[in-house]
Image (cartoon, rainbow, N blue to C red; front, side):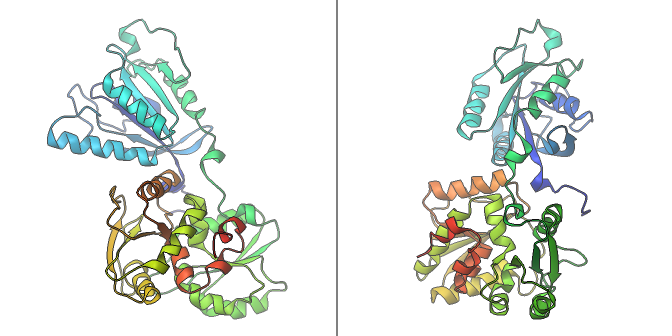
Length: 400
């Protein structure tokens, strides 16, 4: 992936919903200026959600999502509807396309209720305005458009752009912790699990944000931490390490230097740090046979010594002092029913939109299932969680 390409997880997600034949895909094509979706008069032409990365000023990089009709029928149709509704978990702005010749239906009202419940900013775009006398919009949530003639499409894009501010969607990763001229030491192990010829996304993002702040990121492997610290004229503002090297690195970094991990930074960036810190306490009360779900936001080829399937389970079993039953999910898979699990441990979520990570945390919270993440769990198992939270006093105060 090019360093100049905005990752999908960092883009504002704008999802288009609606009934079959409301002209949803035609509106999507008009907004993007491309034939993103296949359109026809046949109901249910759009099946799986279709994604398109683009720039939409003044929002900047966005992800346009075209979904299947919410009124699809039959067993296969029900599966399509389920996939469409799953898109809500990552939606920052929703556009409900309504056939203006018919008007709002009960299906549309149900979707609006879902937008409101999830606090998703939304727009009702009444399509096919070329076929009727479009009235004046009665609220800031509605607009009349024609995908066929292009009428109202420019205004729709402007209305979409007004729904959220880019800086209100994404939290700071490290910029609020550093100042210009600060030195950061980033510990990046290069081992069998490291991707060939590139850095993983959290490492890229921390480096980029540090450079934008005028700070000075210094990178080294975990085997060169002492030499790196010795060569610095002044102690670094902080050391940020890969989670799986937490135990080794904590012994090499003097106590006066703040130490945290990429995963802990991402716990705050993508979701709620206090939630994962509280969740880590559940590691102390695991009992024989308890089920633990380990979930990753991406899919990758697992190698010998993989952190999610090998290292993390071993550290947890050693900490708990008993045998546990581990389950795994990856990518878009995440159970809606977590009641069988004593604990959920999630990755940092670098490949997931912030909205989706918050949604997954909310699922666990609603069911009373503690949820933590890799870096927080690993720090707790190694007895260094309090130290790793020195930079975050509110989260640190939760520890006994």
